[in-house]
Length: 160
Image 1 (tube, one colour):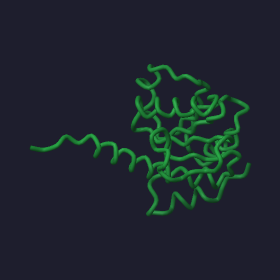
Image 2 (spheres, one colour):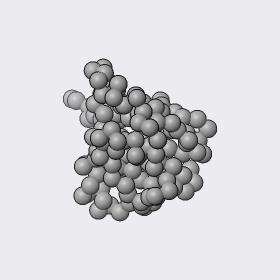
Image 3 (cartoon, one colour):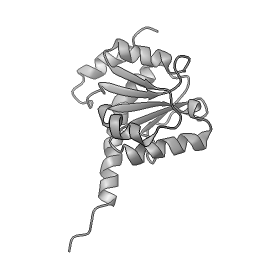
């Protein structure tokens, strides 16, 4: 797959949040629908770690979660929609600093809003093209910052 021309343009746009430098991809390897996107990201100099696990042990979060800037999740690899939601909730609980992009052929449409922010920052319908994935990277970072701010504001202790 040729590199998407969008990533270099996003890198040069000062209005965009910085692109992630280190991505963790939860998918089977090889043979995932994310393979071509992972190759494109690596071609753009982004370090991608593939974790072929459906159930991530808590030790992974302790050791590795903070060493990544963003998670790409092949939600179809996880199982049904409930497995997708459970996986996202687990990422949110044990790694609240990690923005999450879920990709699935089972969703009706891509959702770049914060509608599903309880378990992910962006949902992309598969098959997604390279520009869809590239455009989702900075937006996921932005949506995640919003989720963190709203989460922190909801937990603020009242002042006397």
